[in-house]
Structures are given as structure tokens and as C-alpha cells.
Image 1 (cartoon, rainbow, N blue to C red):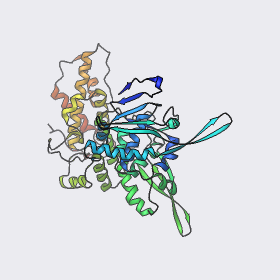
Image 2: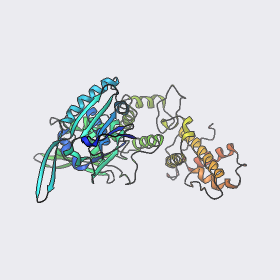
Image 3: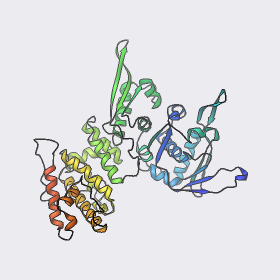
Image 4: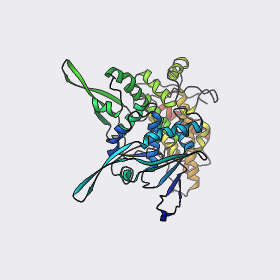
Length: 448
């Protein structure tokens, strides 16, 4: 959401846009990301990279407008992975960061008739921080506008995901892999990898493996399904020589949303992406969970070894709530607020896990509650809309029950307890359905 402030155009002053809410999806010009960005961002910290992504996201397609950004909104976004002191301390650190941005230069080529003009220009005209209302003000330099307006070839990613990552290497690699999000493969030569990720020249392959690639794979695991890396070798003077790296993952669909899904569904799928990755060792999966939840490394492994959680999601207990929390992410009390689409997607997701034999008893108990909530929502909609105007989703247990029990004609007759029993029976029946010949199902018939 944004406010536009009118100005006196006779004085040729740019429009001022006040961002009440931050844009959530970054759209980066590929020619910038593949070109000058590597050079002018050398030596930037994780804080610098996060601010770059924030600013770049807010100025896109705003032409010569001056953008005013509330610093508290940015601090709130950053605080998910790091602490930054008071708001004024954060503002001072921001000012230091932007002094680097003001020195950043890009090269632009443009055609004028039969000649080519080569332009070297700074990216931003000015920036300042208003100490009274703690807003950050920035304006793109007129000569650099082609990199931020009407771009035709870009890389798209969720700003919140980029800022949640913990190292400069993870953040840089995230952007370069997102360029190939629908392909599922990106190969770097060794020199290219070192340059793009701003890796010290003193690092040997072993240093890169342990200090950069391994932590980055854990950091990125929630956002790239089945992420893996393969080293590429060629002939050297003394045998094999490392010549590059190939990263692979399951390609994203072109219509995959970066934002806009419910938080609980995002968190559930991100956890699944970590725990289902066959390329990570169990210890690395634990560390990936710690990184994702911003816990001290080793927390999840210690909890798992001591408590043997009865949940696929290995959720550390929260003493402020009951010993077991639903879906690792949010309390069951919030279930009433979920949209019917969120409930359907959660049910489909959990039913698939159940058929794969992955759910444990606590997860099954959660699924019973979610299916029952979805069933009740379907019934409300059937009562609300005229006959045959509402068709329940049939891919879920709740939807199947609606149709099998012919609820449409017997709304007043169905009993809540019997529906819960039917849901449990379906869940038990479908457990490990995708693993023929196996019957290791935990009993859930005695769950409350």
C-alpha cells in the first residue's frame, strides 16, 4: 500500500511515494544481476544485501519518483533472522549502508540513431533519513532508470525469503538460483562461482565446501525442493581439476506464487522441503531446521535425541503452549480463521504425507482436526448457497465424506462424533498407501 503526495510540477519536482507497506516481491533486471551487480556489491555485508533487495523492490517501476520507506517496517522484516538494536541504531547502520550504495555505478549502452552511447553512472541520486518520523528516502538517478523501469527480462523472488537467509553467500546464491527457478539447474564455472558469491581468493575447494556450500544448502533447503550440488571436474596437470559446480532442484511451476499463500501452508511446505531432501544428512536437516526457525545450531538435534517427538515435523516444545503444537507452526486455535482454500491445501498436503507413511500419531491427530474443520466449512457453504450451487472439493477426505454420506440431503442428521470416527478410519486406511506391503501404521483410534 502506498500514498502519493502531490508536488508542484512547475518546479520539476518528482512525485513522492510513501510506502505504508513494503512491496513483497523483488523483480531484478537480469542484465544488472548478471553484470555490474557482481562488481559494485563486492564486500557488502548481509545487512547491505538485505537493504539492497528492499530498496530495489520498492523503486521498481516508479520512474523518477522519490520513495519514502518507514524504517520500522524494514527492521521488522530483518529481525526474523538477526537483531539490530534500537530503531535509531538501525537507522544509523542503514545510513552507513547507503553510503556504499551511493558510490555504486553501472554501465549502460544506448542507441541514438547510428551511434552507441556508453554511459557510466551512479545508481542513486540521493538518500536521507528523517530522524523525526524515522523514514528512509531514496531516489533513483535519472540515467540509471532503465535498470528499474519497464524491464523485460528479470528474476523474481520473495523479499521475505531473501532476507531470512543468514549469510552473504546464501543470499547471493539464492538470487542466482532463482534466475533458473523454472529450469531447476544452474551451472557455474569455478571462477564464476567465486566471483558472483564474492568468495575470498584464498579459499581452497575444501574451504568453499565447509564454509560456503554446506551452510548455504542448509539455508536454502526450505525454498528449493531437493536442492543438491555436484562438483564438475576436468583434466589438470596432476589429475582431476575442479572446474565448477552444478546446482539442481525440482523446477518451480511458472505460475507458482512467491507470496500470497497462508503462512501456515508456507511453513508446512518449507519444513517438508527440508525434511524430505534426500541429499542432506540427518544432521544437516536438523541444522537446516535450526536456520529456518532461527534457533541456535544444534537445538533441533538435541531436542530430537532427548524427546523423540511423535511428529514428522520434529517441533521443539514451546512451554508457553501445550507440549505439542499443531503443524510445528501455529496453534490449533487459529484454525477457525483459515480460509477454505487453505484448509483444502493443508488436507491435500497432509494426506499425501500420510499415504507416503510419513505422518506420526500427533500429525494424524492434527489431520483429523483439520479435516473436521474443512467438513464443517463445506456444510456451512451447502446451507448458505442454493441447491447445487456449491460443489465441495472431492480430493480430500472431508470432501469425499460430504459426497459419500450425501450430507446435502441430510444436514440435520449427521453427528459430529460419527464424522470424526469416519475421518480417522479414512486416515488409518490410507496410511502408507504408496508403500505397498507395508503396515507400520501407528494407531490413532484412541486419540481425543
